[in-house]
Image 1 (cartoon, rainbow, N blue to C red):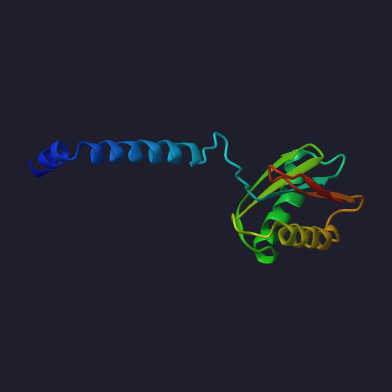
Image 2 (cartoon, rainbow, N blue to C red):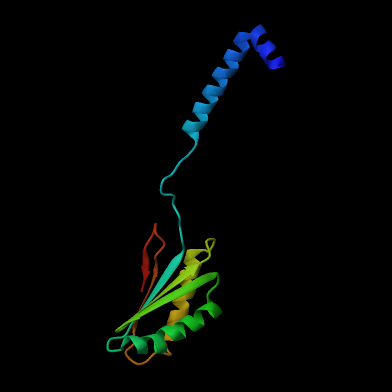
Length: 141
């Protein structure tokens, strides 16, 4: 009840307070950043192994399986991996933790793939590591 009496005694004060609330409300709406599609950088490195003439089952057993077993022991901050094998091509996607340094992760994956290249069958010479993080796409051969 006291606020009603106060408003009736001093009407200009309440008008000024209402105007200040409206001005600050509009200012906060205008300055609040909104983004429909936020910039999400999910660090993913893809390794593509190729060997012509090798079917998908052999590619999965001989190449992709060996590489997937070696990844957690030598590469840091791996969240999970996923792989796909096709006839003559094997693709491994390595998903990293959000706070990883992607350049260090690419260097570790490249070093691992270079060391695994010696264990592969003859004629197995091409491998590609690529950063498939949405803002950037880098290839290292």
